[in-house]
Image (tube, rainbow, N blue to C red):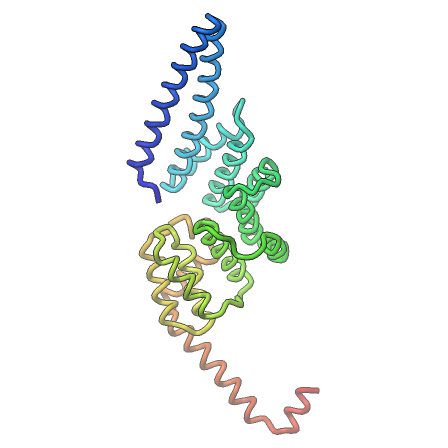
Length: 290
């Protein structure tokens, strides 16, 4: 993750470079064409500065959203999304930011609306941000409870992508959909591989919580409890309570009824069912099968 100091340094270099290029462009324009050339250089430099300022505004919007200042983040993103002379790609990113803000408000309907507007602007782009936005559509549909549509959309996105952030997004979306359905089909090796990657990412608390649920489903109480504690220690806040309230309720339930106890209860229930089946007479088994 890029540090704030590094980001400020990069931003400073960007503006110094932009001002320098604008000055050189204006000077050369003046030498070649006089006053009209100088005016053209100023106009071009101003346009570049305007686009650059929209980039900065979107960056500040992201920072504000992650800091819990959703109103501020939303206002900044809306200025870009509905502003004049904003490039199509930046407008698409801005609507993606609005979708994220809507998710932090716990409003999946608005999230889906903004996400689809962002996707309309992206068109068929294979840009990484556009691909992440497509996962956002699946996430919003999952939150709304339209699980069949969400499943179809996820399948349309194809197999697990390459690239760390895209994979993290794919894993989180896939597991959240499985969580809402109440079951998953991932084997233990896959879950361990995903847990290994998620533990190394500070902002992966939602994925860690989902993995804890997935391990509980396969009866691995040790891994479930470990990942649950890691998810809690990273203070997910609104990333869970607003974006995934169902998962937050599951975590809250684990505090009053530990994961290990729930796993043991499930195993005991399964053992009782097996014993009942074994005790049935051959005639009763035959009748049940018929």
